[in-house]
Amino acid sequence: MRITTPVLALTMACVMPAHADTLLLNAIDSSRAANTQPLPSRGATMTSVQSAFGEPTSTRAPVGEPPISRWIYPGYTVYFEHDRVINTVLHR
Image 1 (cartoon, rainbow, N blue to C red):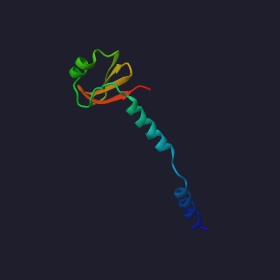
Image 2: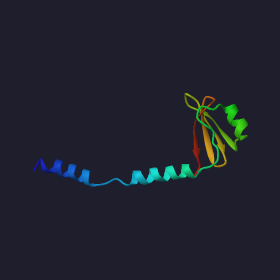
Image 3: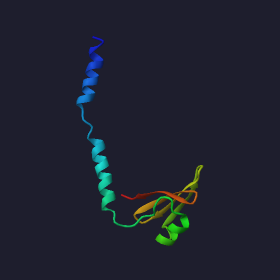
Image 4: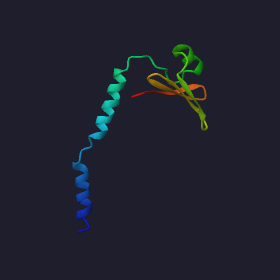
């Protein structure tokens, strides 16, 4: 009786496919592919982002250590660590 429980659990784990992760990744990949506008690249400075993309619609003050700040543009948000871009995220 003790052996059948782990064997049954292992069998069920191998039989059950996980489709949700695949669907989420496909949705993310397709939204990135559909984006044709240029975005700030990782490592760019605040000064270069401002000169290339203009003034942000709004900004958020730095938080934490290292300081992370946000510049919000129409359609995307740029995240900075100190004065360098660490990520650009498209709005849904």
